[in-house]
Length: 123
Ligand SMILES: C[C@H](O)[C@H](O)[C@H]1CNC2=NC(N)=NC(=O)C2=N1
Image 1 (cartoon, rainbow, N blue to C red):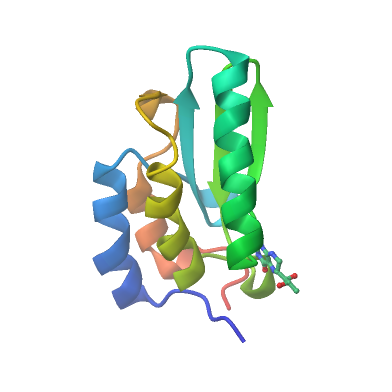
Image 2: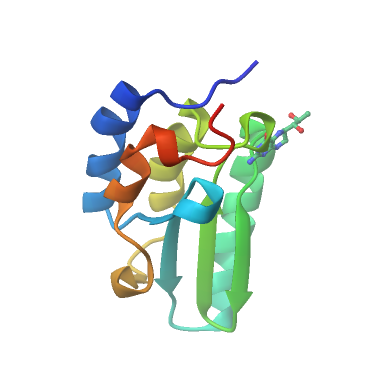
């Protein structure tokens, strides 16, 4: 059974992802990143690569695509919040995004997810 990240794990693992452009959706205890590609075709290509990764890992993002923008959240449904699987998947997704523009100003600061007592479900 996959477990929700502890306070110590949040403190250690989330800030480096923040530096890589990952933000937060505190409502769903998710990490969130938004990329703007040059075209719909490039966005869809990225989504196809992420889909194959998701099938390989048995772990799937929650996401939305509007033309050339992909808005992606990672959380773990099985524990109703962030787990090690999300932390493991984030850099693998980054490696598939190429040089797409990261829209940092449209997500909340990742540090707000460091407060475990505020995380959804309170597991
Ligand atoms: C049986 C199967 O592995 C599970 O349902 C997986 C599928 N993908 C998943 N993806 C995510 N994000 N969270 C999960 O809990 C999850 N569970």
